[in-house]
Length: 215
Length: 297
Image 1 (tube, each protein chain N blue to C red):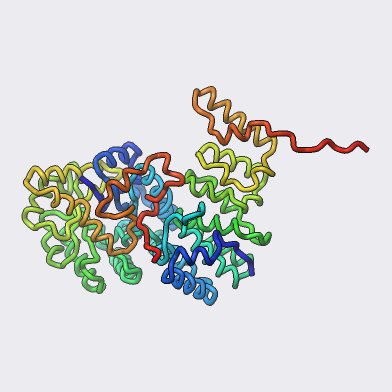
Image 2: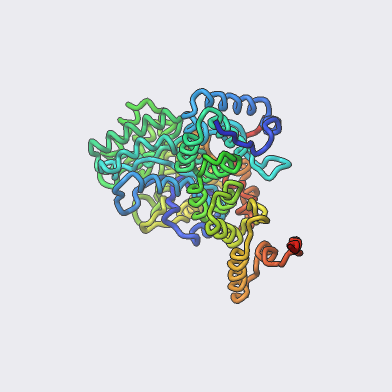
């Protein structure tokens, strides 16, 4: 079995859903633990059976948190390979909301045996900014340096805040900054504004590394 | 005037159209799955198209302040191609989705056995998924096709109120009305139906169970003919409330039967809710893309 970190603590989600919505979510999760394949119908119907909208006090949406819990229920009774295959099907036949929820669920899976970088690359090929943002979460650490840099650049280009990008501080390198520099140059040449996030990435940070000790 | 276009193929239209439609009062629409003009040759061609209807096109419409819904089906023309019919097995994946408000367009093109089979199976799917059915009537022998359509609808056991029979004219409206189905009218620049003939039908039959659409697609068509019909109704003495009923409340009532409409806020007070959407809202402020709030309690 594989663990899927919920988007928000389960108790908080149930408080937001209220008794009826919480009972529906529990019932769907129980069904999935008994019959994991039923996720093909429960996943798309999840929002209308529980609730949708911003999840107060968080950056998340209620329906996303519900769907990630449903993935968690399937993960608890499936091996990593089967789970990855199920997520691939949910993504393949998902609408944009469902696809986003799959990407968010992947962000909560640390199991190295679940590798769905192909789904991230698919999302990064779209122009739907909600998918682009969700693709650059924690699962993106599986992307190659090349693909990850292009993902960051796409975020800047499409207006996805870089705060959505996981591991930005530790992974941004000189090559990324060179790419962003060229993007900024192009914008400046065209008399167009350079997004704040791009400018921030190009601003030299205070020196934090210590000088190597002399031998 | 607020307008819900219950049948328009936005995939074939430009962003200029979205802008003009919003300016004309269009705040919601339904895009039925249909023939692309160029015949498909495999199932993947359908699924990519369906993905666009529940994905990219919904996002695109949202950027212009318009709530996008769709219907999903194997269309009658391509039901005749054995390379395409296996898509029937994939439809359940899509029929479970939010914003998929009917099975359609189904019906007849040339009234073949293969069309009859696909029509029957998809009416069964509508019953199974508790969805309305949107039925296209043929361009040729419309009268015969409509008669056969009503026979199949009756035999399927689906409630007549869950069915809209579309592209009607003066000759085909009567039997559909008598069967208790909804009556769809596609207002075209020079075929099918025009605003003034539409007004005459409304004067004769009343406003019950009538849906007026532009059916605009890749052919010569006009997404604003819903607005023109509303204007023609007013000029003929119908009230603002009558126009609102035909162009907004009727489609909301019909497709609302799916339980999957995604109208922002209160559907009876849509203008304010949607007008708040602007381009900067396409990332975080994207409630229009999800619309109807299911109350948490």
